[in-house]
Length: 296
Image 1 (cartoon, rainbow, N blue to C red):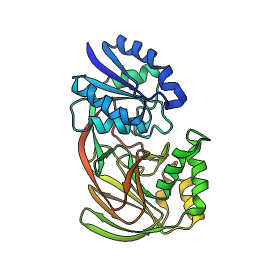
Image 2 (tube, helix red, strand yellow):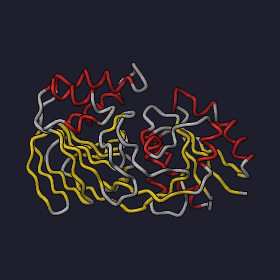
Image 3 (cartoon, rainbow, N blue to C red):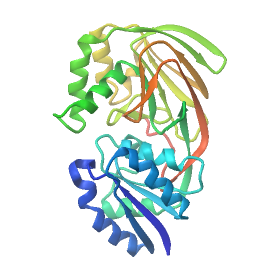
Image 4 (cartoon, rainbow, N blue to C red):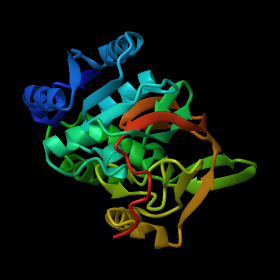
């Protein structure tokens, strides 16, 4: 028997994670798994519950939730030999989407969560590991606003938050160090990405790969509010990268000096300045495909 801990966020998917837990356990039993159900009451308990499960000698941790729960689980699992399985039932599911884990019915997703794992790179920002991207400037303000909205929920919360924050947007001055290259810029947004998606399916860095040993850095430069809105409307397909004031860079170490908050996987990471590094193969993810999704 394979020992599995099923880590469930009871709030994910408007309660869907809890409602499918019994069905998931039945599917896992069919796949020769002995299941221990973990339902932490709050975010502070997630890492503790996951760490205890790992220390008990489980063979796999399966997270049932969205990017927030996966962020917490990854911070317990990073640099261990315990693979992560994902059942995506959150608002954004960007990490699952980047690895091709967000498709199929529940049984197909369960089989992927029990499939052989692949090694995935992670972003390290301070003491935090990040799966998708670390963001500064306008998208960080939008992400914070979306998380605090009571209505609407789901992917539409990002659209609503964007419209609220847009009148407040003003490009800021940043100093960037990308490996050995130094830049002084004025930008509306700086996004350091390990995968293509953020904000619930927007292709902020269309060619980013989760296992290539490099981070993609998207800089949206000194643009006005209307131009920024037009660029963000194109992020769904990745066509924003064709804008003359949008540039993509690749690096394994990034230093960002400026003012403001920095967020990752929808979670607060701290305030600038920040040093961000790539951690090669820091997490094993079951059933994942690290190839980039491409545009379109």
